[in-house]
Image (cartoon, rainbow over all chains, first blue to last red; front, side, top):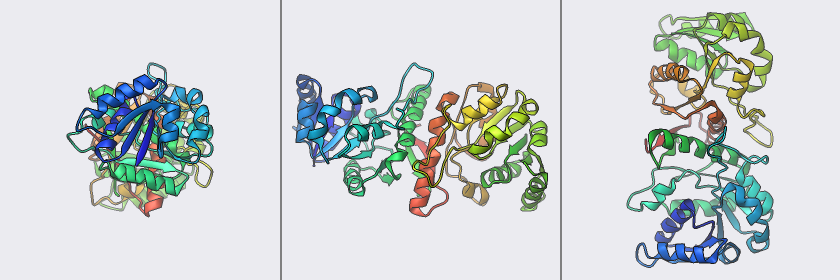
Length: 214
Length: 214
């Protein structure tokens, strides 16, 4: 599939780009700055055997991608997404956004609407938003020599969109677990606060989660 | 140790009572209704070989227990805890409370303060509150013939209190993972919404979580 990653120059977005390209998908790295997007695409493309990764502005990427992955900072959604609304239309949109605030009294700081994924949905009302990939550590994605030890939790209101995201997860070798409607995205995003805490306390970079009993 | 379980007639509280009694702790089941507490204690005590479990009102239990476990419904905290404040004092208080609302638009419905554990702390300001045991399914606790397949996530502001709760977890055979301050209790409690969703979708009663990469 043809996947556009908005904010794809960040660690999480770039890690997903690399793994998906290795799995046979075509990737468009999106950034505010087309030059930075192209530079990151070149860097990733040359990591192995000429992977299919290109760079564009977020707006161009939103138009070119079949699937749109939002890997933007939580604080940048309201400034970035409204101008992409027409380009995104009814596409499947994957929100990997985690509303964390480091250095404050509280690490997990979701918006009033409950979660960053619900904010994405509010800003792109026609899109079919699915929340996923929050727990797959960028560090795990970047080290492509081993399998990723983490389940993929997926939630959203559109069953077809969840099917598509399930395919994306399976192509990375992940076990995919449907955790219901987009109203569960807050708890999904919140787990990242716990993993970030565990990483810091234990000097790790790649803690993850597995569901037991399934 | 001597553990009082407020709301111990419920499934989660009774399951913890049973497992802890089997591990050698003395248990006081608390309930609004002393008769119900005694009946549940009798039922649990007779399950194996005369386990050390008694029943009392929540107020009496709060005075008798060395450690106080709050296993009350999230909606009952404000009505129940204020009158226990003096009896609880500076004891270690374990909140297992999960703010879930079934049948509404959103399953995870934490209070404005961020989590049920932080509400417990606000209502019992002298207590040393730790959030824990939310993900250990009541069904797993009740079936005492096998080990519990779930990690124990623990958060709170008092290191000594977390040590005590770690001991309680280890006595149930659990791996205990410190996930930081009580301000992380919202994400910890939120996981229960995901496990409840997974259970419903997969006709299970005992899904749980494990942290990977540790």
